[in-house]
View 1 (cartoon, rainbow, N blue to C red):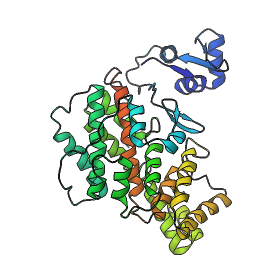
View 2 (view 1 turned 135 degrees about the horizontal axis):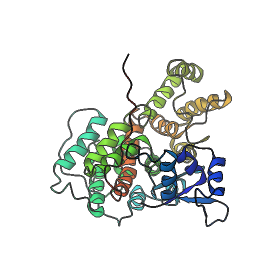
View 3 (view 1 turned 30 degrees about the vertical axis):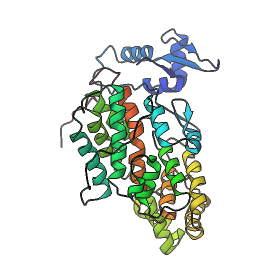
Length: 380
């Protein structure tokens, strides 16, 4: 896929300073084009790659990781934008299904779970993986990689993941995914909880090249089917530093309820070296948190909301990083009185939408383009 890079992206790709990029332009080594706004310079990715090869003395480049040019999601200061539409805006108005169709560039279709019967007695994470494995096992044409077939399989995957969590029959096929998931996570469903679940799904649908998304794109590059690609994403997202981070934050809030905000936050800093749910490598202040927080405030019981706000206020008072989306997820699960795993469940279900969008995009690229170069050292 051809594309254009900003000056900042070009500098990162070449491993040089921004001033060096403009030096290349002035010396005629790198053509620049003026952006539509007339204020920025853009660079053709092929020109950048050619310069990168020359800067390495003409050495072969198949040993490097691929440069990923994507039209799926852009990370902006105001949060992710899905194909140009701000996730924060979509979270206030759109159902998850419509956002998935936007990311996949497909027409709407049915979200029907595969007929698998009762899931095994196991952890929530294992039931989600089981749903994906078994959905693929009964798909007679799971290797059909046409976009419509992939989107159809993706809808089945999401619906089956939610069905594997349990929930009343009234929340089965035909109702929105957010309604089904809210009922599976909490019965009875608290007022406002379904809206918060829907907003969470939209906000977490994609976040550009997160670790789990890269895993999915690598699987797509080898032409794995979409079921195996989603499993690659699930295997990565489960880590406590990625999709599992909200669980640690929920436990922090439970500890704050028992012992007070200061004791809980101090212990987290002492034993974990950080405050879970605070700080983000891409944002000074995660814009997604503010959106989700507005939904949490509408449903939270006063006493639990006070606990959540107290931890947040203490962190701000002591100059800790700002709360991120994981704090919002933990605030949602804690105030709703549901399991600490709920945030991770929301993350996994939501991110299938983004994974599949990147999977479809990767299928348009040359296969087997991901090959990192190892530097061999003699073990001591």
